Length: 199
Image (tube, rainbow, N blue to C red; front, top):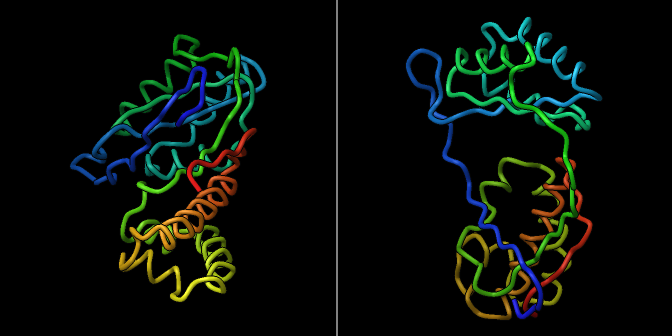
């Protein structure tokens, strides 16, 4: 990016959709995240979870653990593609033989609003349809931008016509990136730094 010093670049891709398979398993591992104030409380939480999960949908349990629980200092993640695998790992955690730990240096979080070249037709459409927070932020930015454009930016993004023209590319990326920012923020992810790239 033309910035000196050490840079870390991460490519984040959408995970494949979980597909229900025979025997109550899913196509790929499902993580269950746990956290507590100390190591004993973490083991106790694992024991409580074991008494609850039984016939529960493993994806629903994973989603609930990740989105409705506090993130405390002592943490563990168990993963499995079936209820049996998850319960086996959770049992090890509850007995004190599973892996757990505390963050040594949590570091800082930075978001980068990328520039021209990262645009693609239809970008964000599925997020728009699935997440009201994303849709609301996207609509608000589009409303502000459209006063300065001769064509609705939402149309440019969703149908791709003119998307590679700088005059549309930059506002389109900005609308999508602000909406992504608000979506991440709604999940509790807040950056320490926000930087932009390109014009």
